[in-house]
Length: 233
Image (cartoon, rainbow, N blue to C red; front, side, top):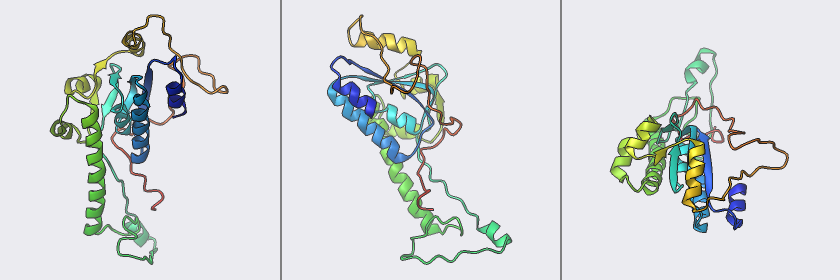
């Protein structure tokens, strides 16, 4: 957001290339970033998403706010969907002779507790929450990809991942190109041969070029848009 605000206020900035290398994240974080990119585009400056190793789930959610989505030949993307991961340790607790005794203000206040099996009505409540968030995700993709209708998006949004070639064929991205090729294409897009690429950074951080300082988030978990239940537990 700090960098987007700087680019929005700078009259010399003609376009933004947003490099995405993320397996996803929480629902709200994805929504906030999507909203900020949408707000930035009101400046009239185009935003081009460049996918790196992985731009899946929440990473793809963010890309859908951009004017164009470009993937590297080996990018993994997709994973359109939502997961709420629960666990049950009641069996282990029985084996070691432990039990809990929750005092709640209402029937569903301890729904999702890992200390007892989930009741059917609780599962239905959580499924309704996931469905509502999933519908929102589908709407974002539908609005961000004009070539796809809602029915097509839902057929693609079963949580699976796609290669760059598959994503291009299905209409989830606009083209496959290297980062260097994307930079050159963006220069042509803004209609200036003399324009140069700049990368914002804080003074205390050294980055020799635009490939440097990729996010350190592990990229092994690529199939979910996480619902953070830590505070509830």
